[in-house]
Amino acid sequence: YGSVLSIDLPDTYTTESFIRHCNPVKQREYKGVRIDSKNPYIGGEEWITFYQNNEQDPRTKIIMFTDGLDIGSNELGHD
Image 1 (cartoon, helix red, strand yellow):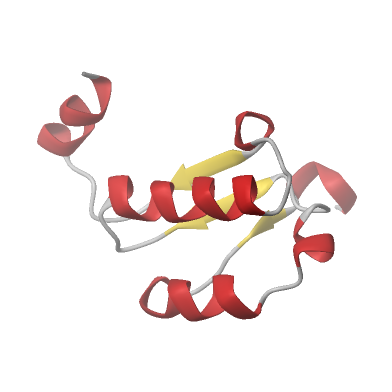
Image 2: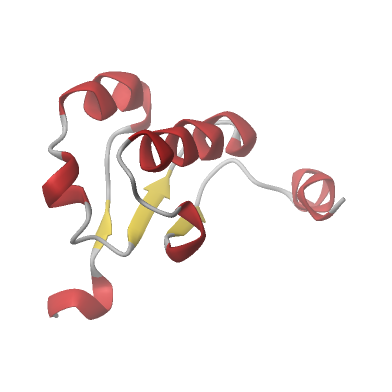
């Protein structure tokens, strides 16, 4: 699908390790990441920090939260 669906799918339980070892140049090719089974605030901040530390504008990236969200946690994210 080329760049249209270029969302990176790192494993949540090893997100910190993935971020430490991933290639920032390669990561530029992805439109964003999917965060699964992790607190969306923590996971989102980890990726925002990664992008900022590697001279990438996090506002141009997609961060998808796909698991562990319910009505209550979605409402918290809206505030």
